[in-house]
Image (cartoon, rainbow, N blue to C red; front, side, top):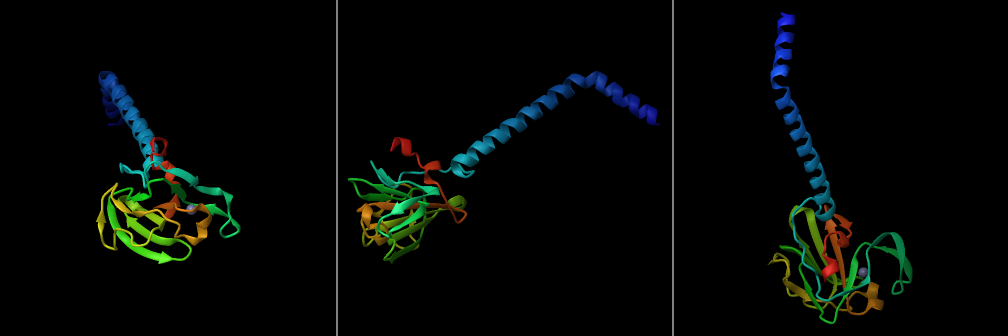
Amino acid sequence: MEITKRNKFVEFLKNYWMYVCVGVTILTIAIIIGVVAGSQNAIQTGNTNLEFSLPMNDATIVKDYSSTHLQENPSLNQWEAHLSIDFASENSDVFAVLDGSVTSVSYDILNGHVVEITHENGFVSKYCSLAENPLVKEGDKVTAGQKIGSASNSSNSEADLGNHLHFTLYLNENPVDPNNYLDLQNK
Ligand SMILES: [Zn+2]
């Protein structure tokens, strides 16, 4: 019984070894392509195909994202990590970076007027230091590129920066570096 089985298997290999080799090769290549494409996607967009708009036009980065080195904050007289990007521009319009819905519009003395928008795939964008009376209210649906307010100096914790937008992007509730998602090279 054993011998017959083995013979059949050997016979099968003899007849079809080329097909088996080709099959294994194709499968290996497919797995490699899948893994490489998957990891690249994960780095760029958190494993989504979302296209981010810029939160301001023709903006300069006045303070960049930094999670590992501390930056001086003259307004609070302290050194701190800055898990956000500060933008300033002649044109103070501020835009939603993705489609989504407004989950909070608030004010506090440190952050000024703040709009928070919740998007697909675990992303939340937060716009601080906006001017009074943002153009959206809680529950509003917004589209990428829609104007939601204007940059101002309402954030007392960054008063030294003047009129600016303090922009934070969260993925699954953790701040992430917006440089990895926004196309800031072509702004
Ligand atoms: Zn800031």
